[in-house]
Structure formats: C-alpha cells, structure tokens
Length: 92
Image 1 (cartoon, rainbow, N blue to C red):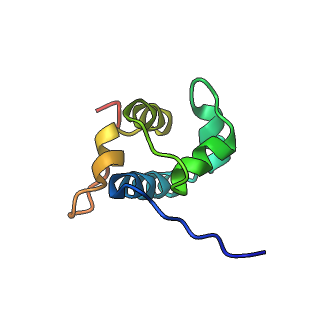
Image 2 (tube, rainbow, N blue to C red):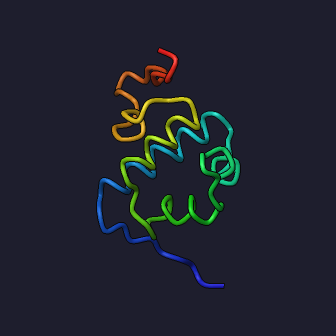
C-alpha cells in the first residue's frame, strides 16, 4: 500500500477541512456518522473526499455540516478564536 498525499488546490478548502476535522474530534463524531447525519444523508466517501482535498467544499455544504455538528458555519470557515473560547453553537 502506498502513502496517499493530499494536494489542496485551494487553501480555503484545506482550512475548512482542518476545522471540520477538529470539530468532529471535539464532539467524538466519525466521518461516517457525519455522513449519516447530513440531510440528505451522504456516503462516507463524500465526506472523506472533501476532508482529504479530493473535492472542494461548497458554502451550502459547509452550512449543512455546521448544522449537523451543532456549530456555526463561521467556526468551520474561520476556526476557533486564538483565546480558545468554546465555539458558538447554533443554539446561541
């Protein structure tokens, strides 16, 4: 098995993917669980393709992911603030 390298064509996509992975880890959710939580439900490979830079994130997709994991799209687009505050939720 060979190592797979990821080459993001757009640094914004890399940042969004990094922020989504961080939020998934924070709430202990797997990519597969996220895929099933999205409406309409997606295949795990759909999520993996975006998180690994094989497909670009669209704004509507980022919004749907944010809703599914209980944060705002801004957290996924920009990440946490430098002071490490808890990210705002959709209930705020």
